[in-house]
Image 1 (cartoon, one colour):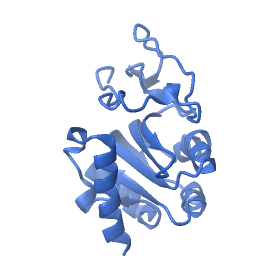
Image 2: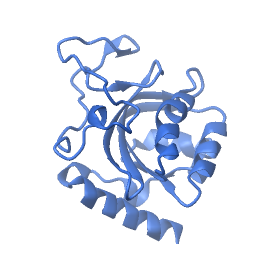
Image 3: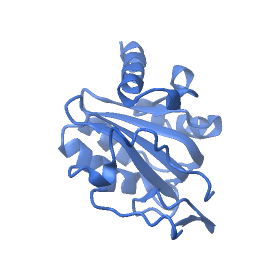
Length: 188
């Protein structure tokens, strides 16, 4: 797991720890020291800790004028034991919502598993962004099946055309426009 790095090709456009509005502003990463782990497996030091024992994130891009943020996730999303959605909501999402972000693009190809529980934080997040949306890109099939089982498809948009295996080939604005177009069609 230490070899799974967050996507960094957009850093010429945006770096979360240099963005004064980001919840990760000022955070420093020591590339020579692996301190965080998921179930005893060390993870790459560029992943940002959000308070969860099993879920880590990297804000890849934020555009406050267009009201969107792209967040890559890594680890195990475990609401049943660790209440990971609470950490994600309180320590990352709420800060962006307060700044007017209402379109969230979550990239989850490195989320290995999902364990569900209550949907309270998802419902709160959904209410917070009124005219916005949450798009979950490239999550694994078994994770999406669990989301359906816990009826999270009411709050999160995932599957089908949102399985974008080539997202890394796009620049951030083109990627956003693609996802936005897919979301407009889904919500129309």
